[in-house]
Length: 141
Ligand code: HEC
Image (cartoon, rainbow, N blue to C red; front, side):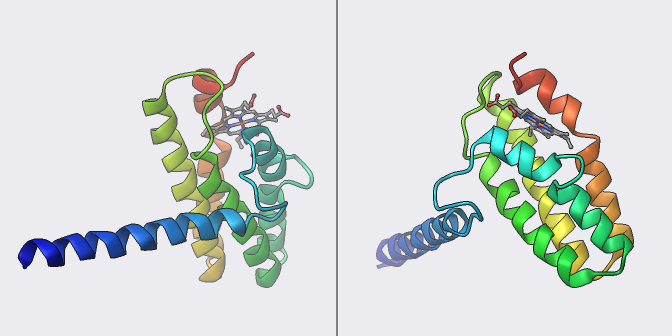
């Protein structure tokens, strides 16, 4: 009996995890396939119209609804990056760095939801300082 309960609990958790993963992928802004790393990089970090810049400017202007919208899209990309295979480098390092990236885009989203400029900007700085560390390990020349 114990075993049965445990098995069905695992089954339920598994289904929830699949739903969650599926949900975040299908919610991707471009289309319903997994965004590639280069696409995530461009959409997230492009100097003038990347999500990071857009969130930063919206926060500066006190436009929290815009900030939340961009942060939400950014967070979808953050959740998707680690599902890609890195073009270079080992999987363990990739997992650690992409987990951190996803965690940070989530912090940006939470910051905008809380209308907390300080927290939002702190998380944006974390991403801004993370570029080289990941590129040196995983970006082909
Ligand atoms: C978690 C790892 C990671 C982080 C953090 C990261 N990048 Fe990247 N980036 C990559 C990888 C991997 C590639 C190579 C993608 C490929 O060649 O398929 C890349 C490629 C790029 C490219 C080239 C895209 C193209 O058109 O091929 C740009 C531009 C870029 N990153 C900018 C940034 C900036 C700016 C930051 C920081 C704000 C950043 N990246 C943070 C992993 C990362």
